Length: 146
View (spheres, rainbow, N blue to C red):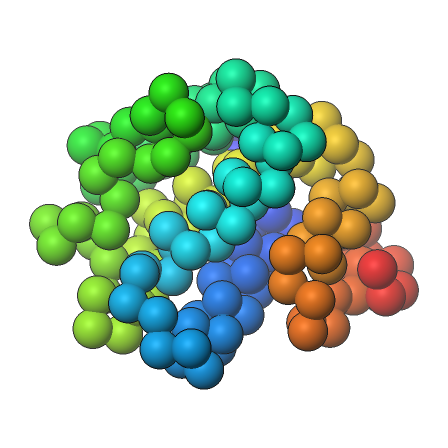
């Protein structure tokens, strides 16, 4: 299953927005982990822990097939990630930048959300989590604000 360029573009944008927000608040957590945790907290509330666990596990399985650097990462029963953000992972901790594997993981998670929730709900979810971002509807190419 090929990674949609739309999902990847959206993942890169979320990582960039979170990176900017982290610099403002001087967060020490890696950017991909902050993005994942924001999505996890909201989706666990909406779909339950078991529902999010299933979604995250599938996203991680798909991402691992494309990025061997994620081989040590696991989804805990509560939906949190184990092994992401460790010094041995491919994350630039000094700059809090996402590596290729982390970007693929976030893109896979977003891709599944687009499939299961649809574009409108996914974009609304993202707008709620990152309210100060200018999110236009580039997933479908309509270029309208969400």
